Length: 340
Image (cartoon, rainbow, N blue to C red; front, side, top):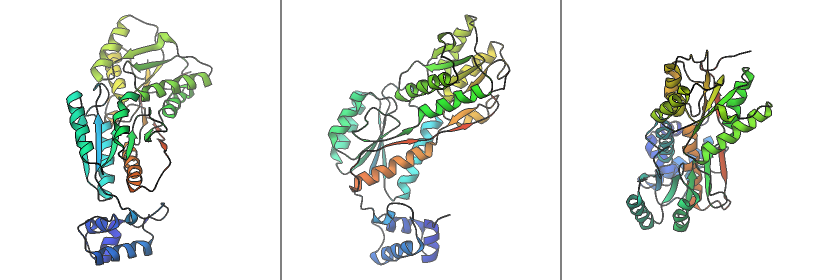
């Protein structure tokens, strides 16, 4: 384990907060103490393996997280977005910066937020772009603020982007179903089109093709991306007495939760009759019955990487535009059974 801020604080007999302020070149610490902190950090190799010590950052301005709920159909106060925000907050604090959070829900709040942005030209922006189309990005590009787009990918080549490797996560999930012997694999697909879901569908199709299978329309059930919406959609579909797949991949855990309720209410056992895999690894996955096999998204890491890249951009030490995709991890629980 590397040297931590706590280690430096203990050796210098100062608080961790003082060390953080000194390393991040923030006000609130005298120059003698700052020099002692930086000297000890270099001696002990604090920050070794990174491009530079945090102490060498000379960032002005605050970090502003803009949460853009264009439709409010995906971005909500769910554990996923709470964890994402926690990752941003933790990394912002660690770097001695202030985090401001602005919400856009309608035209009025959009105008209010853009006024704030224009009035604070030194602030850097993390734009939560889960629900956005390309046209929604334009005002942020025109503002010329340091910008990192988080959880959306319609701005490649124009701004730094941090997002989930959605394709690989869905591909791995469906490959797991194939490994467990499933050949009739269905898809619980969101009716709300966003980049993340589109990439997941591509991963599903590719994994099936790799196994010599196809995504059958008869096994695809389109539902709203909410627990209630998924429950209603799957219930209505099951009322039609369709030919059922042996397993489903769901676009996210929220859809999976609603679908599981509908499936069980219609007399089917999970995973005895139908297996199911979700996406996100929300906390509820461990307590739902049965516990849900899912694709784990490194939510805190997404937030941390967005902050780190934005600080680099605010400092003016980087020129190239990057796209950072964070890998996922399949978490096996009890909602998938082996057949065959």
